Image (cartoon, rainbow, N blue to C red; front, side):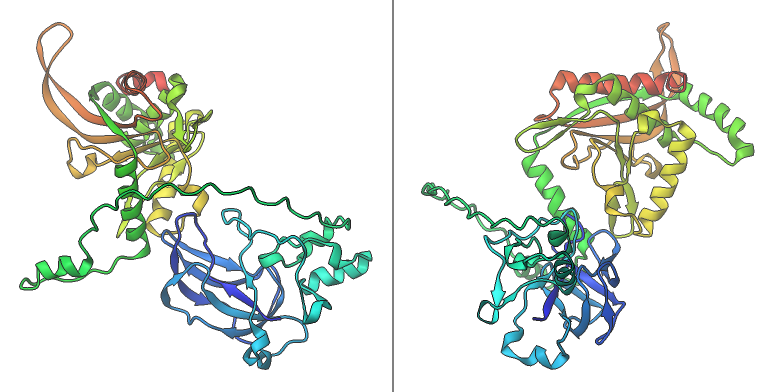
Length: 428
């Protein structure tokens, strides 16, 4: 029975993608683990591997096709003994072959492995059949964990040939409560366009990244109870210390940025105030041990938030080098999902664009995000009461009130301020 190869979900936020390139053609033999296509997700271009062996019988979606929904059949895989002619048969209705990805939940396994042709054929991969024959196992006694109960290699290698017990009957489902009154429907796209029918405009289609940003930020502002804490930070000591460090590091080609100091300051502050190093997990709070700090990087058409893991234990030069590498690969859309997922805290720095202060939107499930403005020379009152000119940077800490209360957020921001105003303390 030919298998359907489905459009994979290569990231937790992916709903559709572009089939950028086929790396196989009809008639090619593939093994499990072979890269067969390149898929453009909402964040990056990623390789798609086969999870079964067989022959590519038919390609259903041409390369370059955009907005292919997850779980849409994109190709047919022929098993041993099958030919392309079998695909036109009514019996060619196929189970799906899905990628073996950790972020995708496996299909629920049935009570017993399914059979075809009147029950005389067990639904299993050719490799699973060969291993079962070598081990003398009865495939009918093995429960499949593959798509739609298909028996795969792992099932046979770890097989327990005892009969599979029947599942307990499902408990009775309580009647659903009455549905709440629906909210007013948003204005449709056509409705918005109609407002500007007599004006000149250019329509810009949304790509996958922009759709994801729109969905996640809408979710964040609607579901996260934000509150905001603001502070001014004097940077004179930091700027002088940075100049000294960079002068010493210049022969090694190392240049530390103010943003590198900010990353280090936030990472250490999360260790000083560990209760604030936390994320919202729906029905609980997860408090992290390491300081995994995400940093927003603007790219064409959107942004990434690559994560610097264990930032509290890394030197300024190590953080600087890692941040440069992540930012460069983010702009090329070459980051792997594990490099931009996770973290408990984020930094969004618009100071280089001349923005003096702003409020950032929390990136769920993070507990907080620090919005950083430009360092600006301002008149301030010194410790002796005299007027002075100082370099001052305004920051705003956006906090998820479900995770961090006001006093705890104030302690976290104070720790960040202390680190930046006393930079030597971060390196000793």
